[in-house]
Length: 167
Image (tube, rainbow, N blue to C red; front, top):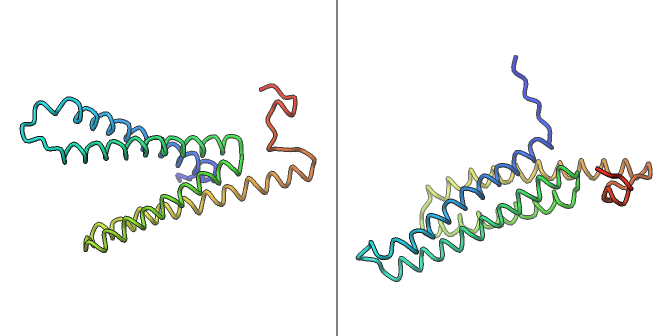
């Protein structure tokens, strides 16, 4: 029978790679919007300033989300590789921030009576909540390992140079 070997480290690394894929998607979207802003101006006779402003704002959102998503994925993957609970906690704090932003968007959707879209957003909020829960468990696991090794006199938060180790 097929058995799935689940570990918190594999789950966290998978989440990091998913965020990296999201950031790459946003990079492609950003390039497409930039292409629209620069090159499509002359081909559209009904081009309005309002469309341009919306496109520029969308471009800024995509660029900032691309950068933020890349940072989130790097912090998580690097934090797991180094077994550093601080880096993993930074990822979790950013995920909680995303959860609050999604809840804010959901409240605006409910206010505008877009109940179907607001209900669909609940699925993503639940996914983010589950990811936050498991990443928090991973952080606790790393902290327990550090406490265990600190009892033996080994500092896991030190860099390899501080241990005179060459990797």
